[in-house]
Length: 377
Image 1: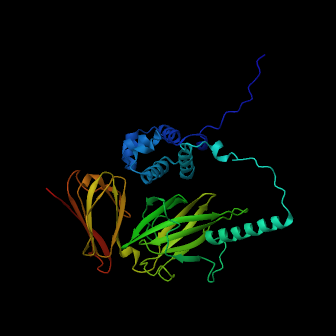
Image 2: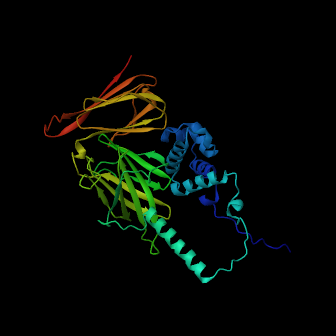
Image 3: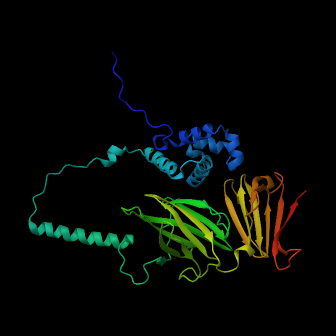
């Protein structure tokens, strides 16, 4: 009589037991989608989708593109972004020429040393000094005075945001549908508000046995100073011009961690009430689905033109008038709050789009945004 096998079959669909490409391909095929279907809805070209499913990361211009497209593809398929990013980084570790066993094997097996009490006390003293230096340099131990609640420090260095994969996002206006973003110690969120550029990073997570983890963040404005702060789950931190080091902020930003895991944080960010009313602003986001020339003007101030590669995003804001010119209308998607996304214009054509605030015909006290489109012949 044949013996019944006791080997258990791994749970089907367990992402952590698969590779990145396998997880993406199976999720897509499970939804009966072709690569062209996904490309139309995510604006990621099929060749990059294929590269992700085949784990051919060398096909991307850089790791920033690979991580950005991977995040977008995973979110579209409803997969856990954090798990996929962990799988991606695990794949990169697997490519190391030094095997893990080699890295973890002891380099020598020295016999136990017979040390007298004076020697042990000396070694303990040295170890204590080294520990204190480490705690001070890492910020865990801080003898500085001042508030220890929300504001942690203001620093002109960019330690927290160096060497991060940058993900371009937009900040929803006050009252608009909330938008969640995932952040780890490997990526940074970058966005524009008014004429300033913001870079948002996760420095570290302090784990709590009760699950009340605390996340430490850094915000950088216009490549200048960092503002560091910490926040717990569902604790909203308001960042505005009243905080030392953030005097240049025209609007308030409210940051609320919704989930704090062991290695990642899911945060909600939205505009506050500081400065000019958010509803009075003209805000337009451009998603480049093909390479295109691009130039713009904000409230009469012209910006130098530049070439933008496919896969990048630009968010522009103006108080009264915004002019945008793109060299390839079919290669740029226009996104505005409360409006469906649309292509800027015909492929290969120069398109100029002007947005300006005009009084409402029925109520002159209310302004609406008027859009004018010109296509070069």
